[in-house]
Image (cartoon, rainbow, N blue to C red; front, side):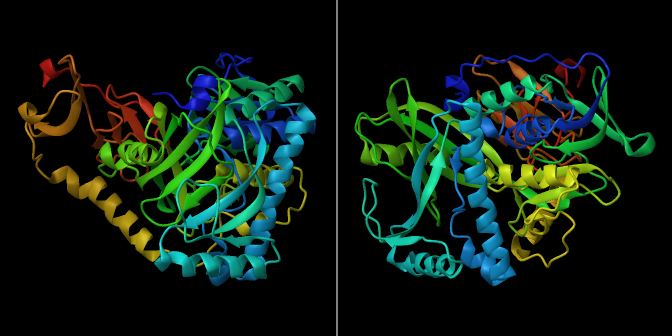
Length: 503
């Protein structure tokens, strides 16, 4: 199923692929919310901007979000204070609150109709044993001078033990917002190209860069890598500093009047709730089912658990949409925003937004744009990619390194534990043919699809995702469909496809 946002967005803009060489002041790689927000600000400032997008506008992460605009990033501020101090936490909160104002200002200035509404945002718990964590977060946020509230009653159709409330947060339709940005960018002579895959970025003469695609190139002074997961491995080495998490969302018609507000709990199983407009009615969006991308998952633990939660409170509800998304998460939980690497002057990045990219994308765009304009940004040091602070989450770092080692080396030498005949229809697995690993998918009609199950990013052994019928990389989160077509970065090349008659 497509996401609600992608299915309900009536695009008024279409863009060609890049077919000839061009020059620009700034080349932006990626047309999600971060890339287009950068393009919006820069084109308004008079920069000659070119945006290159592999797919369609907002088709990947932005088009698969829950689209909450909030500075309440689950229970986060007690962690920030304990890890980095009150000043750091205060600036993080301030930066995100400013981003909410910025987004509303853009919407008003450009007259974008994107279903923007202010909402109260809540992190809640239904467990008495977790109430202490909520109250610690309330104390932490209050110590920063922000007016949060502890409440025991909210609009949810079930009882809670307590929640922390941030007022004046927001939600919107992300694709309608991107459409508005695109109109402004093109009205200021910005160029947007879709269906255009960037294959290389190399330094040219006098600190300019040549950005190569399959059919043409862009020469520019500045480059912004806005590809969700940075695809340039060296320098930067972001593949050692981040992992990807997959989460799932369903949109249901509850057949009843819904509540106001945005909600999320903080312990497993995690559930996120918000409403959305659809054909004159209010739908309920429920998110959850998180797991590290590439780990085995089943329907019951992903979409199934969300549907079960919906039916519990709205027995007559109808599931209209289901979709999933991948979020980049840094090991210290802080995004990477700023200079891509000290050895690549004038190249910038924004990534690792966790699950809060709607707000953090605006924070990132302002930091990068200020850097290009040689203007000091108050929040730049918080997110600097070159930071060398100790890794706070050593367990996650250890797990990531172990998984990468297994997938890059050890698993390739293990014998496959399943035979061709054991693979069910509409399912896939890795088998061995002539001592070589082959990824097999059997369609419901019995057609066989065979691929080389090695990620085209860094060569990790892929795993079969039986929920979405895809090949997923457990190292860095790349994804490919059962025919081998690349769907998600950091890989951008398709898998090698086998003709079984040749094996």
